[in-house]
Each structure stands twice: as structure tokens, then as C-alpha cells.
Image (cartoon, rainbow, N blue to C red):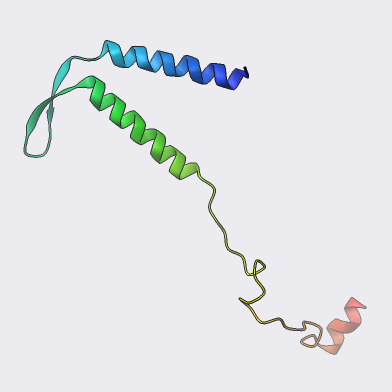
Length: 91
């Protein structure tokens, strides 16, 4: 196994042990309601949300370029738009 896989397995095992040690109920004050909720659920849900948001934020953006399809812009002959001075400089 690769070291990255072993590292992920160790972190997952430590996180599971941490969750199992924190199963007691805690009173949470929501906006209008007080509720007794297990720390296991709260920590697990917010960890999952953190992973999802982290993946979503780090995901590469899809960029659509005008070079991808020739139908997006009409092809122009750029040599015809150059001045005589520019043509002399290029050649």
C-alpha cells in the first residue's frame, strides 16, 4: 500500500475512536428551540459538511475558451487588419 492510503486509514480510525468517545448528549440552543443532541451526531455531520465544502472549494473550475469551438467566433484574417507599418515589422 502507498503511504497516502495508510495515512488515510490511520486518520479514519482515529476519527472513529474520537467519535465513539463523545457519545454523550449535550444541550444545543437553536434559534427558538433547545434540544439535547449527541456530540457524535454534531461532530460527524459538521465534519462531513467540512469535507464536502472543502472538496467543492478545491475543485478545478471548468473554463470554456473561445478556442474550444470554431462556431463561437467568426474566423478573421488578422493579416488584413494590420497596417502597412506592422506588416513590414513582422516580415
